[in-house]
Length: 400
Ligand code: NAI
Image (tube, rainbow, N blue to C red; front, side, top):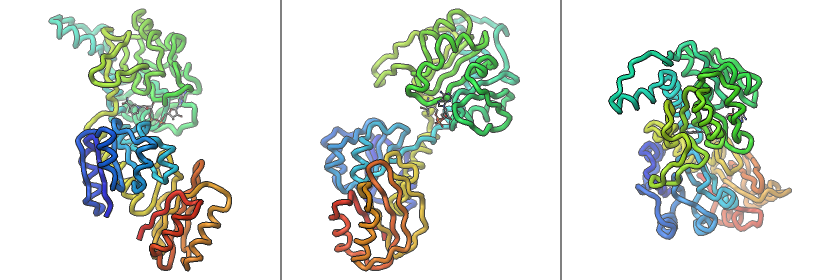
């Protein structure tokens, strides 16, 4: 019987996936639990589902030898000690792409609102002013959208923008196949010089730190708009404020900040607060009911595939073994230290117990190797005990 414990109000779509796959021992918690209660609750769990507030550190994982896999029902996985999980043979899954569409829709909406100067007009009307004018207000149709980072989100933004008649340019450090009529720019500068709206969809990290600095902002067209729903570190916010104040840019939408409040009680401190035609949002680009539902489904499906067939495709800390059609009487999942001769040792152990390997798939990652073996023969407790006791073994489980 597989016991599943889900924390932090994970969307009901996850439970639906588990139940459809025949798992019904599912406990759900509306919030995260304090460490001691968490340990007790997970003592006999096979699968755990968490979001960002539940921390699974190495000490806790050491106390949970029966735990088979971890589902992070979100994008980030920093709340889990990934290395410790790997060294205990526990794959960790997340949902990196479930909110792509949500971000893309928000960005297109912001582009249209900013081109019409709606944020500042909205503010004026709320204060009782009736500035009825077409001054500085433009249609999106025919304008040029420059996408920096043409990955999952960037390319979707481009597709949506073409649907409202925008011209789409993109710049990426990797060669990318353009969707629709999008055109690639070799350099960021080329893109900045031609775009009426620039939207950023690059990863965070050193390579993209302040790529939009004073110089890049100066290279943008006069009156252009900047949208950042990627990472706060990508834009030099003080330089952006200056570009807006000077009227070089006509508007901006910022969803991510260099330093973001850690909780709902903490205020945001940003030089952009109170600026005209600037939309500020609390890192909610990907936060929709649909994305929560997609995340619930995507991560639960990955956990089900792992528990039913050993597939680790999409795991963030583990050798990735794709789905393999079952071939023998039983399937053995073996995680071992990634040392020379490990496969030979495993095969000999199986042969000693009269098991005939009919299909075998090995993948390695760093310090561990993961082998999915389909075997003919009787896999009894003695076989499993021997496999588990061998010094190369990190973990060994049987699917039948
Ligand atoms: P992705 O990995 O699919 O795409 C990123 C693209 O940027 C890749 O094609 C990569 O080659 C390119 N790239 C990397 N460095 C570059 C550089 N210096 N110049 C130009 N291109 C560069 O990532 P995805 O899923 O599209 O996410 C993009 C960003 O959106 C990430 O920073 C992610 O954290 C953020 N995000 C924000 C959300 C929100 O709520 N605001 C929600 C989801 C993601």
